[in-house]
Image (spheres, rainbow, N blue to C red):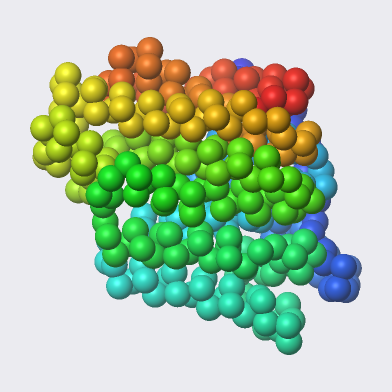
Length: 316
């Protein structure tokens, strides 16, 4: 039997629990609808953010469902660019989420006023229940909006800024859900988000090349005398490997810094996706930083067990 399926059978038995705000009363039929909405959120994460899906399954029950809702919202916002090549259409879709989020923080708004979207409705409940910080939710939208306009990164520092807004913000919100108020945990979240964000850029090269988009930083490409055409054609070369090595080294540096920070136990399960980041960077190193190696595009059959092992050891 496929190793991934064994893992899923073990942990999907722990279904996401429904999220109900302390200020929102639900009737029996509403509770059923709520459960299906949570399942919908979990399915979105499973389909489009599989590694974070596996890590979220290993969270305690009290954190699992709100974490799925938050990650589903992040997926919905992140996928806007993938669903359309038209920047104006993408902007309209991002504006929908911006308007929905604005309404969620209107004290007079009720669940009935929220758009009839399962993710939006569940996010409203999570916001009411856990008092999530609006600025971090907005950064998930504005970072994608800015990227939709720019279409490329000028420097590695720009990728770090983008990663802080689009990935670290998720960790800040998850820490809020877990009730973790710790400066060291925030520091680790910042580094982990940057490590994961930079790694995501590396992993997306073969996909973005099909869309005729280059997300590798321009300053690094120029440093190693590489053109965008080299990336779009997936041309492996010594210069390309050197460029990938420098970018991957920055990601690994952030990952090591995050792992060296002592954080509360709850934060360790929230930071479990660090295992997937380390797994990819290790594979990339073994392939001598050939970012176009086909084996890097395949799911790791042992990753679920690495996640489970680190969860047992309370490591990340």
